[in-house]
Image 1 (cartoon, rainbow, N blue to C red):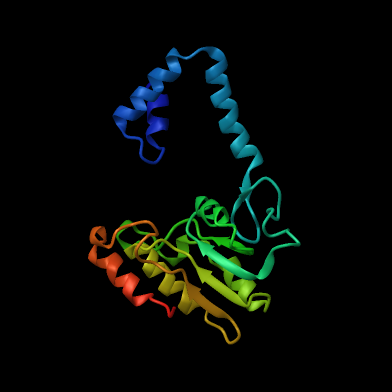
Image 2 (image 1 turned 90 degrees about the horizontal axis):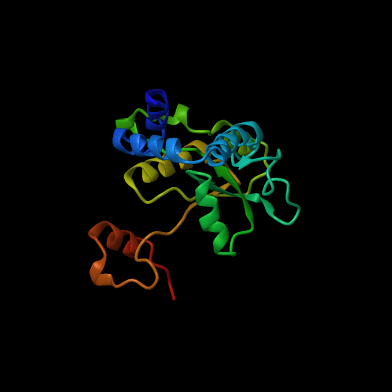
Length: 192
């Protein structure tokens, strides 16, 4: 039981108490449920890997975005995590491909450029197959630092580097916006 608790504590956001609760839940569950969890973990590790082009999680290489004939292969959207892709896809307004960094720069947490998956992005840029890179990192201190670093790293003649807009969310009231959000909204204003 203590081995299971220690393994569960390795999961992000799972502390000692949560790991203990999960371990006891697994102990109390029937054999089929415990086996199903075990099989699902093994399957993820055996069948899923990173796309060799964009680093998205996939079961085929290249992934469905990189191999699609209908997507604009010359437009690359850089995101921090694979889960960010779903948010962009929900809009149905983006038809390019992606590049997943698997993190953001965070010197306080010991995350430097060498920890991000950037080498295949620079190879794509250097190959001349990219016209525009949209940097869609989170509007946090780490995301902003990552955006600045990437823009400097990939700036090349003929390659446009853009940043997603930030500011007041649609459907929100200005009175509830903090000063950073309001500053970004004013900086990112556009002509009507």
